[in-house]
Image (cartoon, rainbow, N blue to C red; front, side, top):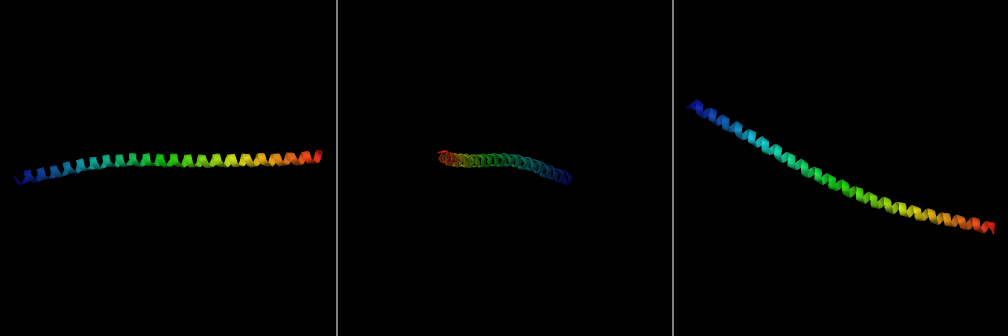
Length: 81
Protein backbone atom coordinates (compact mmCIF):
# COMPACT_ATOMS: atom_id res chain seq x y z
CA UNK A 1 0.00 0.00 0.00
CA UNK A 2 2.84 2.34 0.82
CA UNK A 3 4.31 1.78 -2.62
CA UNK A 4 0.98 2.53 -4.31
CA UNK A 5 0.58 5.82 -2.44
CA UNK A 6 4.16 6.78 -3.28
CA UNK A 7 3.63 6.07 -6.98
CA UNK A 8 0.33 7.95 -7.02
CA UNK A 9 1.92 10.93 -5.29
CA UNK A 10 4.84 10.91 -7.70
CA UNK A 11 2.48 10.60 -10.67
CA UNK A 12 0.39 13.54 -9.48
CA UNK A 13 3.47 15.69 -8.94
CA UNK A 14 4.77 14.89 -12.44
CA UNK A 15 1.34 15.45 -13.99
CA UNK A 16 0.98 18.80 -12.23
CA UNK A 17 4.51 19.78 -13.28
CA UNK A 18 3.81 19.03 -16.95
CA UNK A 19 0.54 20.97 -16.95
CA UNK A 20 2.23 23.91 -15.19
CA UNK A 21 5.00 23.91 -17.81
CA UNK A 22 2.41 24.02 -20.58
CA UNK A 23 0.64 26.97 -18.97
CA UNK A 24 3.92 28.80 -18.61
CA UNK A 25 4.82 28.16 -22.26
CA UNK A 26 1.38 29.35 -23.33
CA UNK A 27 1.74 32.54 -21.30
CA UNK A 28 5.24 33.07 -22.70
CA UNK A 29 3.83 32.88 -26.22
CA UNK A 30 1.10 35.38 -25.33
CA UNK A 31 3.66 37.73 -23.81
CA UNK A 32 5.83 37.44 -26.92
CA UNK A 33 2.84 38.32 -29.08
CA UNK A 34 2.03 41.38 -26.97
CA UNK A 35 5.65 42.53 -27.04
CA UNK A 36 5.79 42.09 -30.81
CA UNK A 37 2.61 44.12 -31.20
CA UNK A 38 3.99 46.91 -29.03
CA UNK A 39 7.29 46.91 -30.95
CA UNK A 40 5.40 47.23 -34.23
CA UNK A 41 3.41 50.17 -32.83
CA UNK A 42 6.61 51.87 -31.64
CA UNK A 43 8.25 51.34 -35.02
CA UNK A 44 5.22 52.75 -36.82
CA UNK A 45 5.26 55.80 -34.61
CA UNK A 46 8.97 56.35 -35.24
CA UNK A 47 8.48 56.03 -39.01
CA UNK A 48 5.59 58.50 -38.92
CA UNK A 49 7.57 61.03 -36.88
CA UNK A 50 10.63 60.68 -39.09
CA UNK A 51 8.48 61.04 -42.20
CA UNK A 52 6.98 64.27 -40.93
CA UNK A 53 10.41 65.66 -40.07
CA UNK A 54 11.76 64.68 -43.49
CA UNK A 55 8.79 66.30 -45.19
CA UNK A 56 9.28 69.51 -43.21
CA UNK A 57 13.03 69.53 -43.94
CA UNK A 58 12.49 68.95 -47.66
CA UNK A 59 9.92 71.73 -47.83
CA UNK A 60 12.23 74.11 -46.00
CA UNK A 61 15.23 73.23 -48.21
CA UNK A 62 13.18 73.61 -51.39
CA UNK A 63 11.90 77.00 -50.28
CA UNK A 64 15.42 78.12 -49.40
CA UNK A 65 16.81 76.92 -52.74
CA UNK A 66 14.03 78.71 -54.62
CA UNK A 67 14.75 81.90 -52.72
CA UNK A 68 18.48 81.66 -53.45
CA UNK A 69 17.76 81.00 -57.12
CA UNK A 70 15.51 84.03 -57.26
CA UNK A 71 18.18 86.23 -55.67
CA UNK A 72 20.77 84.88 -58.08
CA UNK A 73 18.50 85.60 -61.03
CA UNK A 74 17.99 89.16 -59.77
CA UNK A 75 21.76 89.67 -59.59
CA UNK A 76 22.20 88.42 -63.13
CA UNK A 77 19.37 90.67 -64.28
CA UNK A 78 20.98 93.66 -62.57
CA UNK A 79 24.31 92.93 -64.25
CA UNK A 80 22.75 92.71 -67.71
CA UNK A 81 20.95 96.06 -67.44
